[in-house]
Image (cartoon, rainbow, N blue to C red):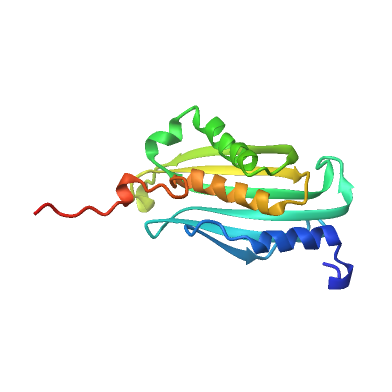
Length: 190
């Protein structure tokens, strides 16, 4: 990476915006080492989503900047994400899940007024059963969303909030301010 004085202003503003916002309390963000070979400038965040103290989803959001621009990006800044979550086993075979998971991303970006272009990605659902020496835990199912898009405006807070909303949907969290029935404390009957 170039010396701090040579870092382009567009990249510096984008990183500052991504650092400035705090998502809902169930989503823990931390800066991580960014990949160095994808673009001349990069910045990365990791996220852990907790529900009732258990990790239910995780993700990475990477900001790439190439001052020369990229034809495929249709711009010089790009956001890239990978989100994974464990699923209930019956959801792993639902043929509608990939389309629904994709809308979790696009709807969340749109609801937070994050303007973008050149969006693309994949949604993968897997089911795993262990055998032999690895036998033991019940079968598991996972969802993975990989996507990238080019921000059109400088409102990177909107992109971060949209990404965090997608993480919350992937993790099955209720909307902010809404408690799920399983989260309510019940008083024993007397």
